[in-house]
Image (cartoon, rainbow over all chains, first blue to last red; front, side, top):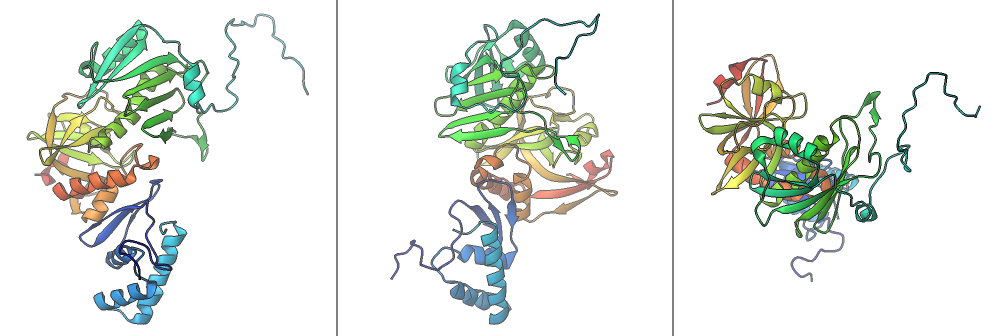
Length: 93
Length: 318
């Protein structure tokens, strides 16, 4: 059992130094070095919002399937690809 | 082949000081540097009042004072409030700090290094190195004899950096923008160099110009207002007023063949604002800036203004 707020092992989590705000479903993100400002689309923003370290990647895929018109296979592939991009940009903890 | 260079008959040799630290490379000042330099340029003091942020500089020469008073007009005075930040002006005692680099065969436009240690900001460029402690409200500025008019350039460039951070701490943004007052309300036009900020001011005859390079947005009574700062780009006239005006519009400039406005979603509008903030984004203040930019776009959405080189764009702006 995990206390609320503590990260779950293996659960992807936003980088704690990332600043972000979600405007009408779209996230604007700044990293501490300020060199890039990222604006995500609606699905990317929802995934970003779910990256609180509490949910596994599989759980996030499930939520995306519930909320958006997509299949589990496509959602799993897109979420994995998105997380890889975030990781490459050092945006995950 | 080595050897000494000979002076030809008739060569004029200028006598003078040969600095121990020749400018063979860049000089990156650390804390020990600022302890070492202490010679003021003179005995004059000048107070700067910048949209409620007060700084008192000590150590200008009389010549420096005259030049800066002429440049900054109503933004400077001989006195400051008791709680003004104090900055000591000193001789750099080195020939310069950064050296201009080439980028793709052309000299870089400008370069600045800045770092934080607690509440102390250190910044330096070609002709100046300085620090300011926002908690202790004191600092130091060393001016090096680089190029023409290094005092004016050094003071202005240091002030730009310190003000950008000071305004951010007060909940405002120093935006790389042109500001024009129409109907007693401020319209801000922003974008990178070359996007048309100075052009907009030149196309706005009979309007009050807040500036063509940097304009402050600050919170006031639950809304936002814009006011001038004494930093300008190519527009030669000093700011016409130090009053603040309610913020009426934010326009990201795009040069085009037609005049039209295109709304931006708030996520993109906030990102565009952040992309036009000098100094603060690259020094770890992005999250704070995003918080402020978010509140600004909540109150005043950003639009993309496509415009020709004509005053017709004003027809689009109510």
